[in-house]
Structures are given as C-alpha cells and as structure tokens.
Amino acid sequence: MTRIGIAVRTAFVLGLAGACAPNGVSVTSQLEPAYDFYNFTAYHQNRDTKVEILGSTFGADAQSFARAVTESMHGQNAGGTTNFTTSPGPSAEKNLKVVLAFNTTLAPTKICDDGTLAAAPGDGTTLQAAWCFGDRLDSYVVARAGAINGISDPAFRALVVEATRELFPPRADDETIMDNGGDSFPD
Image (cartoon, rainbow, N blue to C red; front, side, top):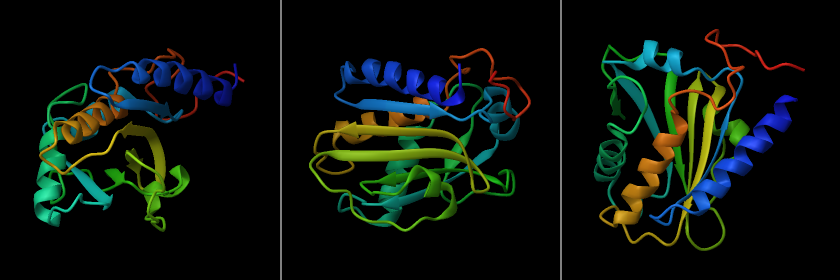
C-alpha cells in the first residue's frame, strides 16, 4: 500500500473514531513516515518539550492561555513524562517542538515553519497540532469541537487533551514504521 493510501486509511479510521468521541471532540491524525514513538521518548522523556502556540487565545491573556494549554497537555502523551512548556529550559531538545494553532487556516505543510496565519472561517473550534523536527512535520492532528467559551470551558481542555493523545500515540497503527526516523513504508 502506498504512503498516501496508508495516510488516507488512517485518517479515515481515526476520523470515524473521533466523530464518536463522548466529549464532542472530533480528531483526525496523520503520522508521517518519520514519526517514531521511540524517538519521542528518547528526545523528550524527563525533559522540557517546547510548545509554540498560534492563533486565537479565546479572550485570555497570552500567559494564562499558554498555561491552560500546557497544563491540559501534561500526562496525555504516550511514553515517559515530559514537561510541555512555552518557556523551555536547557533540557529541551533544540530542534524539536510542538506547534498548536487554534482557529487558523494554516496549511499542514507550513505549521512547522511559521506559516502565515489567517482566521478560520465557520463555527466551532479547530486545533491543528504538529510535532516538528525543525521545519519537518512528523506527526499532525486536526481536532474540532463546537464553540468554546474560553479556557475554563471543559470543551477547551477536552480539545487539547484529545489532540495531544493523538499527536503522540504509543506506536504507529501500521507496524512498518520502524525506529529509524525514516521512511520504511513499502512501495
């Protein structure tokens, strides 16, 4: 099966599962061939993980919004403990980051390299999340929920929690993804 076929199949299945989520959050995700659970553990376990936040803050000041986001992320990733933070210390891997874009039309191919933001049209809330090595996208999630009334709304936390869980699954659904950080899909 081709990479595109696997990605479409994975996104479809995850989309169906997300559409049935009891918390009202719909999630679709895509693991790039370079995604590797073991690499996430090696680079982030017991270390800071840099988080960049883009887009809407739902009326909160930037510091309160960042705190609400990172607190919602803590403990939701598979693997060892990591400290998701917008102000990483020296323990953080310099080339790796998580980017979260709220209510933007940022293209997935641009999310890791500071793309141009535009407000997302329509009702509801959209969160695009990516795990990036430099400007390379390794894991990507789109999570959607109905209208969110601020950072204290339980739907806000549910949105961030579900996106984080999907962004860092315990292993790829397709066992052909190897621990080499590279493309191992058959043609």
